[in-house]
Image (cartoon, rainbow, N blue to C red; front, side):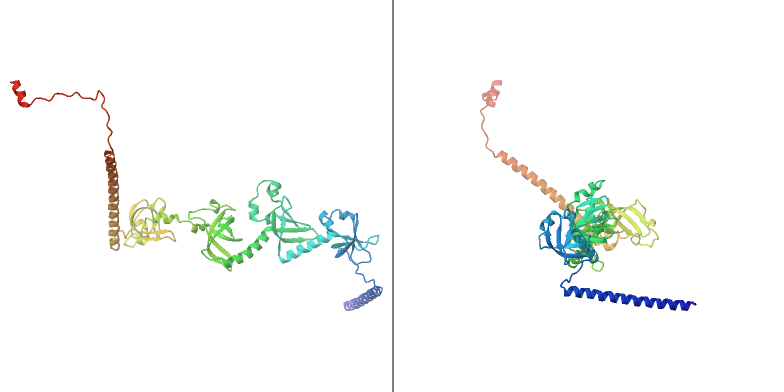
Length: 468
């Protein structure tokens, strides 16, 4: 027999097997239909329960050791006394004859012909179905923290005990952690409300994993969409620092996070945000950019604070002559210090009237020179200086006005001092006059102060005659 004959024989056997199967299914279907029609004719149309099925039943009898529940079969199903002890007292007290409850079919028929039911298993299965729906819909739910272990928090979903790993706990909640033991880290959180999202469901392993971070992220996205529509550049909002990184700090405003870049935290130069900020700190921020497509919000803290640089340069005017010290030379120019913490740049083109290749041809570090301020740029916080324009004729008129203003200021200062001195002198004179004008009090002279009256001296002529 060749290979073709073998294949042909196998094909015929397969066709015969399929034909036999179809006939068997047809016969079973006819018998089932005959049974259903027979039961229907006798008024015994029953819906027989199947193992693992969840049904709604009606409580028929409540006993001390069992509850009988009608589930549409010839006899009632039984919830045994062992399970009754596990049903919470509040729920059991609410049971009454005629009330509908969900039940899970453990055994369609036991040795005594009873349908064995479970109320707790039915509620648990309902909770698993709810968990799967939440997983597929990416929905969130509110619950309470009922416990913890070394890896995270325990949060219930109905009768199921969900687990929130430490990595899935929000940064704000984790920032409050302290201690070395699980009880020290998580104990104080028991009883607190928490919003979570289902991220994993495994019925066989009875595994339900939840995430607070995912729930908050979804909430933030919704809030951010609304906030992006309301915000405008220049708005000032109050927020709270939620996290810090090398490149900046995230601040929550009205439920959505915005970024304060490192350069927008302070006017002073800082290496890391934690030098001036900490998680949980409340701050005022200014909205400086809004990216609708990327859903990003740029914020600034320093723009709500006075710029100390402006304070340092308020006495400097463009065109003014100023003494400075050269601190550093580069290919494009020389830096000169005006004050202890204020520098300006002399561009290479402003060092000399002639073309030079390097600033060292004109100045060197440490030189003290007189320079002219040719530009003040508040936005870039830069001062432009010039050496070649110190004696420029273009500034002669300005120099004369500045010199005149300084002289006028000196004269005004002298006049002010003279006026103050005059006022002091006038005040002293008035005080002296007031003392002189006061009435004198006569005091009787003492014996020691009483003078003896001497006789008057004789006239000059008589004195001379007596002498003769």
